[in-house]
Image (cartoon, rainbow, N blue to C red; front, top):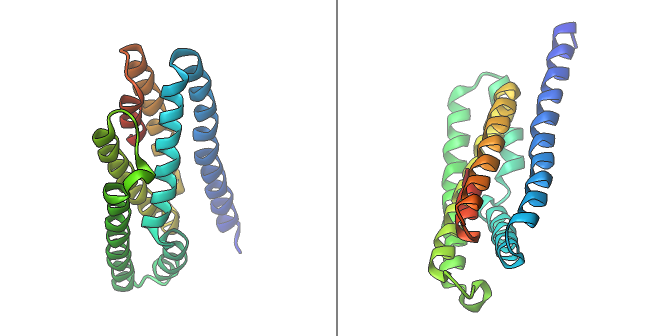
Length: 186
């Protein structure tokens, strides 16, 4: 491994570290601020929505996150662009099926996903969150495979800042868990 490759590896690692730490720290600060500004029922509902989103996004992703990084990384390194396109198209098809399955669970899950208020709105937001989270994971994997981690750092910092500011603005205007869930999409 040459000097340039070690330098690129170090930079890439630093970028990935930053893009993982910034949301964690801002999320902690965000929950502290929320705990002092909204009711416990809003926090509980929002926590449930986020937890369900994470679970259903994992189901929708059907394991594509790890496999696309491995296979797409190899095809990009070997400069086999046609194979790379084929992998991306296949993964889009797979996650589309996963999104349909997860959305069906949300729509027809019965009492498993029942909320006491805004039931229909929360179902719709859950579907939006699952779709956006699954697509975000796919795009993240593609960028990691292309070794353009500097882009991820910038996008993560900007999106985290926008999410926190939007959430705080919504809280100041009296948004409940539904409004805060919308800010989570960003």
